[in-house]
Each structure stands twice: as C-alpha cells, then as structure tokens.
Image (cartoon, rainbow, N blue to C red):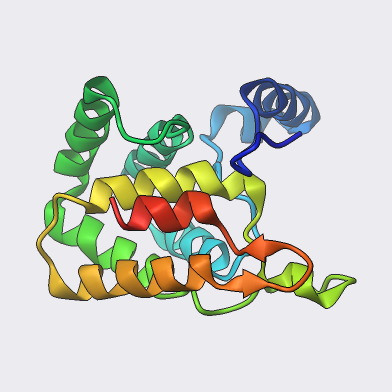
Length: 178
C-alpha cells in the first residue's frame, strides 16, 4: 500500500521486510540486503555498482540507503541529516558524489521491466521513492556542478507527465529541488 505521496507506508515496508526475512537463506540473513527494488533504470545501475563494491564499502552504502528509507517527510529533520552525513563522511565525499551523480543521471531512462500497459515503464517504483528522496537530500549540500546537473535533469524527468498517471514522481522531483 502506498501513501498519498506515492511512497510505501511504514506498515507495508515492515511487512515486506518480515516476509523477506522469513524467505531468505541463513547466509542471506547475515548479509545486509540492498533496500533498493530493481527494474527502475537508476536502481539497476545502483544495485550493479553496490554488488561490485568490497564488503566494507557496500555495507556503508547499505547503511546510508537504510537511512534514506526513513526520508518520508517534506524536508529532512536535523537527526536524519546528521545520521546521513556521518555515513557520507565514512563513504567519502568524492565517492558519494560520483555514485550519486551516476545514479541520478539514469533518470531519463525508462524501467528495465516490460509492463502492460507500457506507460508503467515510465513510473518510478513506490518502494524506491523514499530512498531517492533521501539521496537527493544528501546531495543538497554538495557543490559539484555535475551532480547539480544530474539532479536538475532528474527533477525535470520526475515532473514530466506520464499518460494515465500524472507526474512520474512529485516526491522525488521536489526532493531534487530541495
């Protein structure tokens, strides 16, 4: 079930996490799971990048993405920002900016899944919208021109109308403008 802003509700996220925990193997249960749902173009790129990282860096990114799943308000709280910034410091500013720019640059692309009706290929998965909102908030204090361009293009893409749906994602578009 999604909320009015298109993001998945806390209750639904909790139920999904419990189901995933019950259905995974013992090895999977001890390995932190990437909280991104595949099939959005940015998500496929992010998952591939994360899976190519060494365990330490991957775990840091998963920690940051977990913080991003809590990005479910109109602006970040002080505690949320502090939690995110402490992880970004461990990841490294340049590394964070590089990956964030690469992931937000994927935004004009459609979903990698083939849906029926096909307009669903343009819609961002509701499960990923809080993560994207959090990543966009994390990008706000950065002064990198390539990252700013990627965020601007992502915002434009998010506000484009999808036939029979409306904007691709007002939630993420507004976060990119934060």
